[in-house]
Image (cartoon, rainbow, N blue to C red):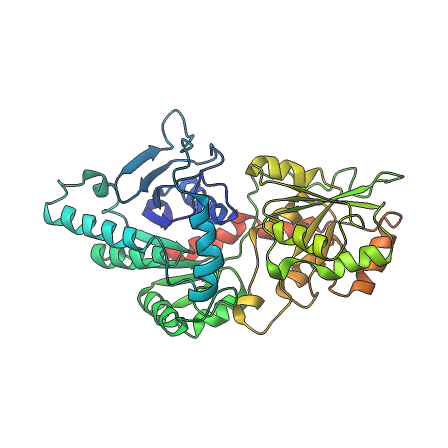
Length: 431
């Protein structure tokens, strides 16, 4: 049974990193710990962290870099990880995002030297019977190894350790690695070969959506299962729509909030055109929390700065973001509506499920036929669910006086992390 096993999780994105990419690995570690497993997390040392985490349960965490290894035991009196001062210039991160990812894809990953360095340390420790790097001994008796990506290098390290320890290897994809529409396909052949390698040696492959599952089933001889992203029910104690879900707005502006990064495929052009044509500037106010520079530039270049009441803020800590979600009049959601690539069809972000768990009305600028669109439709929260500017305009014009938003809480509850990870638990039990 899984509650008798020691689980090693390898993840780059992990608290106290304030990133949506850290939500799934954190929730998985907590879920396994709550169900009796001994959990060890191997992660990279973070250079710039923006918040502390006190939500981790009985988990041992090793934060590693090329020079040092820090150990944190969340079973101690304080389960709060320290916040490190920034010592890596942000321009390097932007260079990777804007140049390397765009022209070279995901293959060129800055964590690759770390993988080889740590692998060498593990081998040396094994050759000295565990005496050279004693901290490594804390996970060499693991029963199961789970690596979660991105980045893909976590799977490379996971494969090496799993083979060395001769234990089951579970590969978890939060985003598609090979053939990902968001990145250059310069090294597509190598990326596909790497995915085939990981899947060929995996005891189990888990992905976040059915389209992604269909893609990886073509590359894998192992079982591939869908374990969707979701919301942490401990952060949303009750799925209660609240008294103000359909409140009277009167002359107050409807406050609509968006959390996260605005990318080129998330500019939501039909929404802004609809608002302008329907003269709804005095009806809605939009607040953006995160990197929204592309949208600011779009408004400026198209003369919309005065036509749209939009306000831009920096990213805020996770728990504060959840509070802001819950107190919004409505939440703004968008994702690509293109379906040419499996990586486009399979996008189901954590944000979607946290929005639904907040039980706030949703302005969803996405095709209703997408996987995300179908889920939003069944949630009962959509004010509008379209990429057609005429439909969007009509829906937003009617919303202030039309009170017909009724959250389908029974459906939403299916997407709690615990419910989703139970699917994974059942499979790991059988390994």
